[in-house]
Picture 1 (cartoon, one colour):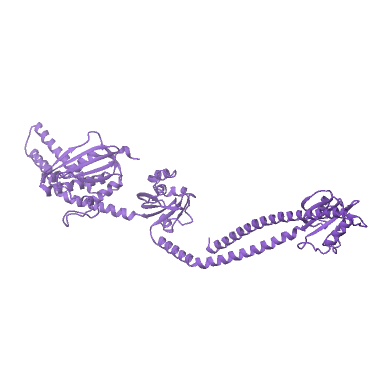
Picture 2: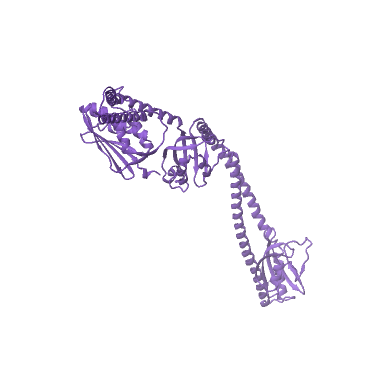
Length: 577
């Protein structure tokens, strides 16, 4: 809605409110004025009636002889006294009347002599109602029609001594007109004040509004220009609004995308949909965590669907939105990390190839021994004649060495080749053993003993075997270098054991402990303690990211002065959701 429309609606609302308040206020004042006028009229009518009765009593006791009698004289005196009284207000007057037969005859009235109004009215007329009540001997006040048929506020009082009725009255229109006029004046004044205030408000706030519009446009252009998508989730209404960058990322036009939670299920990858559906009751949703706990949430492992059916990995941040001290929603920004994931995969593979280069010579020596044995025994079998039992013995040696060679080659190829990320049920003990076998020659060449303490019970994890083996080999290689540099020999102790819902793999080397200032930094990217050209500083950083991606962790600690312990923890199969 445009600002000017909102301002117009605001003025209308304020005008209606002011008009309502004025109407209510003036109505209350009007009712009070009616009651005050009624009380004054009652008092005036009673005073007039008592005055006439007093005059009659006085004349009756007087020694003067009145030709027409004391009552007539009293009435004559009253009429004479009122002859110079023009009434009160614009329409107020006193009237005095008596009943003659079936008619009411008015003896006194201050107004309307020349209006063609008769001096009498039938007793049963619907006009002159206040006088009818007075002549019936009643006292009080009423709002009814007078002898003209006009609505009046009237007080009526009987004069029993003369069988007369006294009425003090004023037109309702006179009282009402005053308040109507005042109300109109007040309403017009209020509207003018509102308009003036609105104009002043516009003049004062216009620069602020212009600046806000400019900031909004700048922010909108910035959001549209960036590749980061964003959306806002208003919890009370359930509505979701999103940026143009979001629509572009998902391949939608703005009008095509829905604005409620049901639409958003369609963009969640099936592997992650259970997380989203669990979120609908607002219990486990990582975005709703920002709403529920009022904390920023950072997620790196979500996968979304585009309109065309393709999927892409995203990283997003969810920020709580607050209003009046209450969390009412979340603002979410995300980035498409497809290219980053590709580069990370390439970096991981490069690191693997670098690791292959560090022990390929050892593997070559390791391969050379069984190949030499195979070659030698084969030539002996060809050139000489042996008893069958001796032949079987030599063939058995050839078979074992060939199998050993095949295992080395398979382990090397499995580790060095590029692979599609995929997780499966992994025998942790077997994977650790395969990793140790790849380093057999280096261990022998550098006088390193390996002490194995594997769990007797099977340890199974749901993991990517290539990535997990990369973690093991990196730790083993670093341990080998550390012990060789420290003592020229050493012992590598490897232990596997269950730890609740996790599997722990512990590598302890007998090299030098790491300085306290270095130990917390060993998992930082590009941090290395080796000489230039001897390490990229990415090995342990990549290991840390791999374990995070698996929902596990990797840590390192000194074993006093006896070396360093690395602990790798990966969720056990029973802990897989």
